[in-house]
Length: 282
Image 1 (spheres, rainbow, N blue to C red):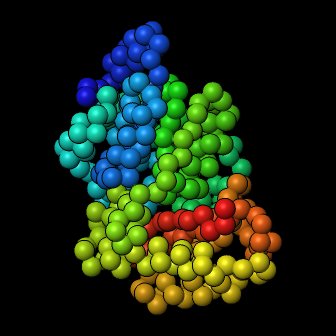
Image 2 (cartoon, rainbow, N blue to C red):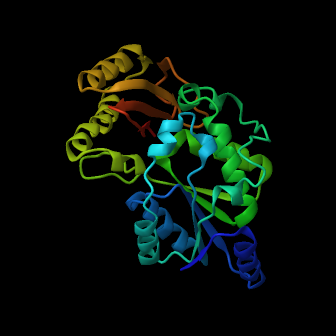
């Protein structure tokens, strides 16, 4: 694996890759890698000739400066995992390399109502920051395919909308959420949890299973309210528990028994904010 820190250097290498007719798969990350990230690398390695992973903790997608400061940084361990997984290229840029003109959101990405609900509601400006950095990285890497994890369901939909406008030939591959034995969705933020907290955090997964098992056609409010009370009783501070159309993320008050739906949760365990989702009707 070769590590590049400068845009000019990685682009020179990728121009050579393109000249050879080789395909590139791209896995964007913020580091603190885990098995979920490595599953994306494995999928990209299977599908494409060259696998590029980026590690960049994007400051403009954090609406809470304290959250940014506490985000785990484990670069040495990340490099080891990527090498072991057979990643071809690691792009490890500084903030000044990605944002040479400073931390300004110069472009307003038109992704519609989807950035105003759920995480968009509770983290204002977050998805504009995500679009800004992913757009920048895609301009630099110019991959054939990008690999994203389903755990960030809403973020995947936002990136799809942005890419449809600016990178219409890009193929977006959404890979299944990787979970710990307890059911807890793997996340870089899990590194901030104690062993006891990680076990407690698995209640989010159990709540999603509860919704999947108990959903019935008709009004959904009682089901959502019960799920909310269950999580609160387990010590969580809940931002949202919602059921939405799985294709467009329209929030649902009622279900006709046929519409493909997804349940989504965001909740704090002490200071750590955790998100998860589950397809509940296929």
